[in-house]
Image (cartoon, rainbow, N blue to C red; front, side, top):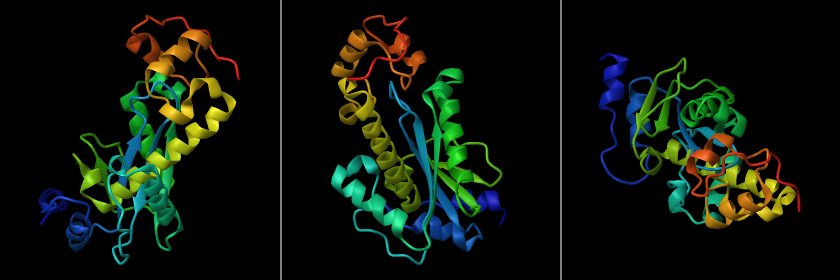
Length: 229
């Protein structure tokens, strides 16, 4: 059986996060498999952050491992700590800055962040499983899985690692720009975030290409670098 056919036929048989997809691919020689997910595509500020995670098939999964969107912050943090401290796990983080989003577009920046996450792994995976409909251009085979973060264990782990990493990054930025509320809204377009933009202008972490396109108030020429305080 050709590798492309093996990838096509390896499909999870039930709902929920498990290892079935990865085990089916391993039988066909696709091991290790890395899962990739990203966070921050729709944000007004901050980077797109992607994570790539290889979970050895021998390990027992954390009971809370799931799509990061289904986990409360405390459980996300606990699962993230489990991922980064578990012997044998490999993970990489990739970032595409707000400036890179503006320079190309958010989809291209997302693919860039994903590629960087894979390159940050300490070993090259045999196959990369990506949450969503699009895969980044990589040297190894890839497979895009819609809803993969709620079905495939290595993608779920990547979703948690990406989410916690980006949330912590925004919490750090909040210390320099507390009046923008980054620690609360994580850069997304809440009402208080738009109000802070109208009052103080944009920081270097804001995506200039998003502000004019999405603003209901017609913010096209915001001054750069809203002051600290």
